[in-house]
Image (cartoon, rainbow, N blue to C red; front, side):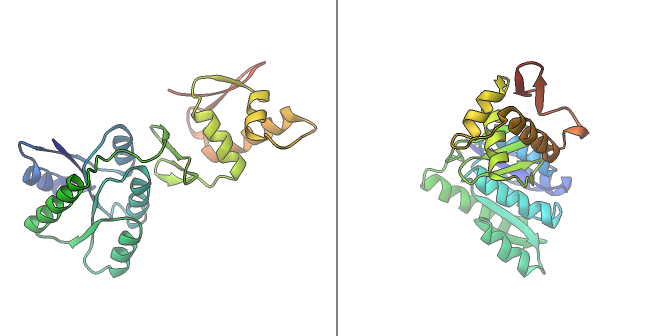
Length: 230
């Protein structure tokens, strides 16, 4: 069974593609936002992604880059007819094919089927080629050392990334300050290790914007910290 995901904030366009493509051997799903797209791609495998780059232009291109890092799934990008710059950028970020809007539905289906055939021929499954640690709104790629929150890149220092990765990969566990220090500061020496960890956690919380919602990193009084896995 081939599974296709359509990402577009135009509901009618999503339905148009879905009902034209779906069949006995093809299931087609659609989402209407960047956040929905990321949540779906983290949970499920697809053999093809068809996405509109004008979710807004910035979000669409950023989402394309994120999908390419998440999975090797073929991507058919839909872009504005008069935007050569957007087309070139889409290919540079990993799109397998680009179709300019407004498009003929038969041409869209032909390009989609071609990508599905190519993926099947090379044994493409959409499985990620690396370890991925994620929460519904937080994605980390330890190979490229990039982190995304709600589809937006997080600007983390080397130590902040290492600390966050250590937390996320041990979600739900209570971690002492000594554990954190020995894992993230392995070759350095500080006069006050507890203060070093406390300061770094404080900086990380600021970048995660914990004041605007439930905390990612919880303080366990008298022990240390725990990454909230809920």
